[in-house]
Picture (cartoon, rainbow, N blue to C red):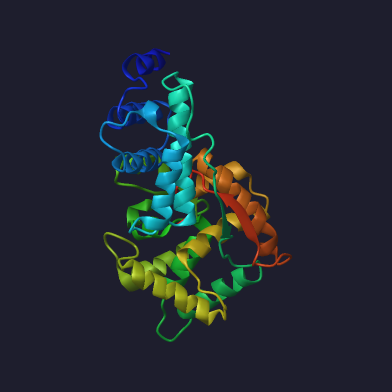
Length: 323
């Protein structure tokens, strides 16, 4: 309540955009919005402000002003504007001006009449329940060659079991693997940057992954990271596994992450556990959960993989996929 009164005390309809945006940023932080959400909101409204005269006040903006800006952004700006970016910016404007009206700073919300755009996007590509074991079998085949190579199996079994992202995979150090209890080995996903610490989590590992991991240690003798390679090199490994499995699609980190999550839903793991395993917020989970339920019949092989989702751009989930 103290912050609410401070808003109306220091911000009015005659306030220019820089000061109003600053107050809004503080409000969003106090509301518990994520760092990515706040950055997206602020940058969108700052872009609008940059196209206005410096003396334009928040109370002087009309619906026509907003529509003119959106037309410029979509058709005349040198930087391309994708449908999803366009939709997100409309969401940002609506949120900003709704905030101003809610606190009595403006009487009329100029963004209320601006049309939102619905973005249609294909569902993420995943493995099916039949392809899942083919991938593991193909990866294991590299271990059985005359010159054994544990890397493919160590990588893809880990991805399909834990649903970790590419950057998380590259950051795994030997001390992030805890195999002291042979019946309950775990992976600790760590982040160095403070603002991303909320993504840290503990994930159970398959018991039969530990022997593969030990082979990897013997063969590669990693020190700082268990996969001391470039992201591109690991992507090539996944491509080779997919080709060996006879897949007609390209095996990727994102495919493994979505497949892992859908598999858990398929075998009736509770959704809160899946959310925790993915390391996503409850706000992000709303959209992700909807996609997983659409993907479930595709994973089971009872629905075509060409299904699309009607996906409104949601500023609360600025990440386009799980990667």
